[in-house]
Length: 176
Image (tube, rainbow, N blue to C red; front, side, top):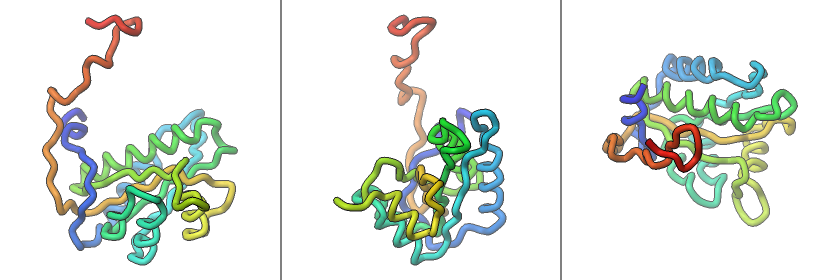
């Protein structure tokens, strides 16, 4: 697991090649196996492969999502707050598992935050995605993950990159 975590980096450039349906299915199985509070499973997902929708997703935020228009795949992570008062955390766990499974399958991915983000001065990113993907109003959009075959290479993290000074034993401020 540590090797996987060291290797996984946010990838924003993708080859112009579709992700195979069997890989998408495997990624979605990982998402559906995500732990959730009280097994509430408040999450739902929209798999986006249509180029026009990917382009619209890339325009759903003021900044930080333009690269999505070149991705062959995005998975939108939704959650129902009526099912869990910790839906944000449950959705984040599912999104993380999506990224880890993508990495295992040789795909690159990048998380795009939706909750509390704006498309422009008037509309929230969430409102734009709700309308674009016809998402029922009772569901919240937490994030989406862009992915595809990497067209860029990034160095893995090393042990030296770990901020070990942020780990304390028994009490805050107490190191080794």
